[in-house]
Length: 368
Ligand SMILES: Nc1ncnc2c1ncn2[C@@H]1O[C@H](COP(=O)(O)OP(=O)(O)OP(=O)(O)O)[C@@H](O)[C@H]1O
Image (cartoon, rainbow, N blue to C red; front, side, top):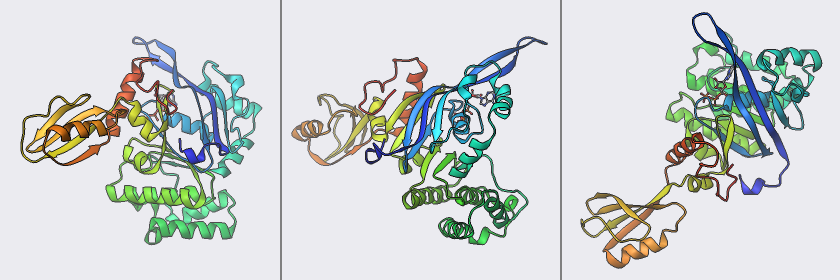
């Protein structure tokens, strides 16, 4: 969690949130049985205003389901959530763990709770689903924006200012007259990002906004998100499988697996929590046999005069450097941080072994 936002007003508040889907599965040639899928299983977190938080996890972990509940698209089966003080599905706790919730949730909402809260919430949030566009397929981009303006009743001056800024930051000028169906994936994604921001939302949910994009388009999207966050203080919840998105944009990351939060804290803490190793890379004066006898380190690779020594991420490099320098002709050195992808893969694996086995349990960051 970013330390400078600690204590700031929470804009997103989630407490014991659950979503249980009821699905029918084949059991034999003719029989179907009803089964529960616990997609989100009692997660709690808060996001202060202005923070950019990564929300990651393996396929099927429950990320999209969480985002859909936070936008009001899905009704929770249990727990509480508030975004900008609004509960998009008031009364959902009454239906907690109700069998067949996936089918009855919508009806219950219509019966007991008009869509007023969800509409109020829609004005405060923006959403981009990387796999799906919210734009009108056959309309030029500009006409889609015009429709967004009317739907959200965006005042003229606000609309013009926001559109101008998005066009500038996302290079949309040449695309405004092009029908959405003719846009490339990267162009369409930029178009979707602008559409999500025209009504000045306080919260932006991004579900895989860089999926399928080339490196240049990814860089453009990331730069845009940084600008929006810095300029407007927009709170961002970012779901992605591309950890570079997280490394470049978020200081805080939440990891979900099997519907449960298994880590919530800083990226640095995640590296340390994963029992990862750092690497001391040393350049010696000449090629020598693998370095031995340095306490706490082991030589993992030798390439000419260069050698790589792995050591626990939690340990200081200073004594290792001193030990190597005392016995070997050292010319240069560097320390490499653990690879974040490896750390996260390890975290997923350990969370699957069951509670209590995760390596992050004793970390100073909020490991869960
Ligand atoms: N409408 C639904 N009906 C039944 N099960 C569902 C439904 N939506 C999601 N699920 C199940 O809930 C679980 C979580 O799915 P979800 O889409 O939230 O995962 P995810 O973390 O977003 O995965 P991915 O990274 O693959 O997009 C999965 O087991 C999925 O099959």
